[in-house]
Length: 512
Image 1 (cartoon, helix red, strand yellow):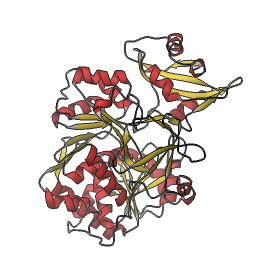
Image 2 (cartoon, rainbow, N blue to C red; image 1 turned 30 degrees about the vertical axis):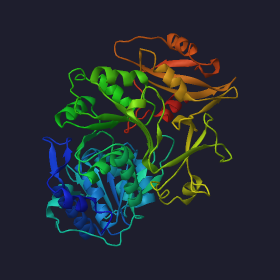
Image 3 (spheres, rainbow, N blue to C red; image 1 turned 180 degrees about the horizontal axis):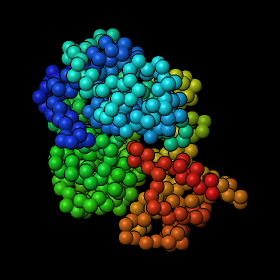
Image 4 (cartoon, helix red, strand yellow; image 1 turned 60 degrees about the horizontal axis):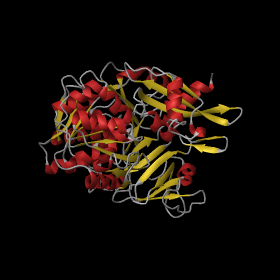
């Protein structure tokens, strides 16, 4: 089995090295590569013998982060099955829809979600077995660790698995409607790992994962590449800034990845001042442009070097990288394409645009997902005849080859005939000393069609009025870009992946 059995392979080379720390457990659970491989074999045997899971079948998981998520991924790899990762924020109605679409034979779930699971069980008769993590059994479900203890640890291999087998279904974003399931192949994983190794990680690195593992950031940005390399991954159950700072220090993490909102939350954690982050070689930020004041705060107070980048579920996820030395000089840039990624900017007629022109970002390379599960039309819609993947992101490239995301096509709004890009406005807002978080959305307007509304969370102990923030924007932006109103809010809706949910803000203010 030359591909797919990730723990079986890694166990050959470094069986006694520390692979995973599950910091969501008390005390922390720690596993070597030998132990991780044994757990994966046991789960694979149980899935095959007790739930009739074989190559091509799906195994669902609806759970907080923990070692069990990795068990399931590696067991599915051994069987040639497909791990189907459901967002635990889903409403039962949404979960039911996605279950009907993917029809997993097994569902693994955290006990916190027992009520949601109970609401979908009756209509999910295609599920052969329900496995609950912790807590009491629900609706005839089996206990995960009990099942593992009873299962055989004999090696499981499926020689017919190839690089094109689907190892995982990841549902895209979900911030604009019901998600689509991107099909992640072993090929995509292998090429993304190679891109990640070239740009970022080495043998023996240690990281703390704070992304939910139903998200590509949790499984594939750093976790799996580092485990393939033989490093150590520390898992958190959910993002807690105070705990993360402690874990970075305790386990002497060598790199860390997050999104801007997470970094902002770290700086306001009660243990920020005394946290020793000197073991970190670098931090990586993605998901949105990192505000320059935040880069400077980490640099000045913690001596931190920031790499920035850009990725997405359907491609990579590692696509672009901005080296630390360019963090200030090229502020706002996502960097240049990773080694085995081709990128360009095209107009509405799919023709390449020159440097500086805004158009759609399109990508080509072997780390692309194999379309969307059970959705051939959506798969066809994102690919052109020449094999370019259309991201739906508006971007530009400068004359040095650095790319800049201008906005999502769907986030851009038109005011009085002018295209307005919220990211540009948000970057100006972040330069105001009182602004902690912000999001700009387009709202309907009788005169202009749409106008901007800035939703702002202020830093603790800071004050600013809407008029003051509008004046700050007016001093830095063209008049048509300045929002019509500013709303001061106690918090913004944040996804489990740490991204601001603009859809919820649009719904909130549309209802007024």
